[in-house]
Length: 397
Image (cartoon, rainbow, N blue to C red; front, top):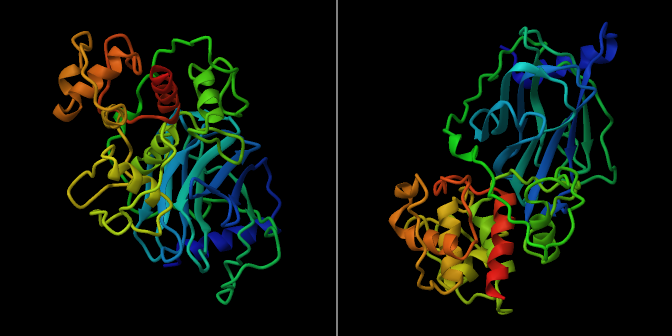
């Protein structure tokens, strides 16, 4: 049986010699240089343009695990309303990161399909390759696609001797008809079937204080977005950053490591150095990690604890109750008279977070995901945490 790689290569070759009888969508894979990092993370994106309409998508990006570690796959705005499933490290001959998406109706929107988020690359050839890309319409037929690779990393995937960057900025574009090899969605790779229902939570109710700055200029945050002024304020204060491509990803979840970085940026004291660089008890945090200093600093001061005695879980998504507990500690764990009785899901709050959640409600840092729910175990988004961080800073003034 031919491998996915050889079948895809055959499809790409055919597409260069045959003239399509109908319009084709274009998938653009943007592989940036290794120095283009966001908070120590390396991000490869896949966009769609000239979209002819699709109701399901399957993307598989393979990589060398000795050079790259995929932390997460973020569904783009084009598939955000679809049922999506991701797996950052599906096993196989080469590990690959997977995005699957499906809906009942075709989407004709252009824009981001997926962002593949990696840790900072190590030395060597990462051998990034879109080994499988398939779009299908609502009637089940495969959509013809032209695949363009913008490779600024400088490596040639088809050259096994290419261990150092070349002086070329891009690879030549190539066309392809992903899925025309006859593979069904899944491509034989395992899928992550975790329940993501907690991520679909409503935003914090905005109070729009007048002292916030104007709407941001991020391409994915409109002026009428509920958190637009919070995001602009958080960015101007250096608490969070936008992405190099001009987006903010307001609905993307934030990891525990990322929140440790946000926390240090929020800290009132300028001494953000840590003396615990050889004493951290966590087996999943090492000196070479981009987040090491942030985690060390927060752990030393008692703001963040591990998920166990030996694990920090840096790539786990931070929950709302975890975030409030961490901010509560940052604020000195003050006494509070806050009540949670008005929230129907208050009994779902973990014991360790009850005082923190009550305090956060009392001082107005959180207002609930709607009028009757506080969603303690829901994952916190970048927009929500921007609003929460700005509110926290305002309470401290």
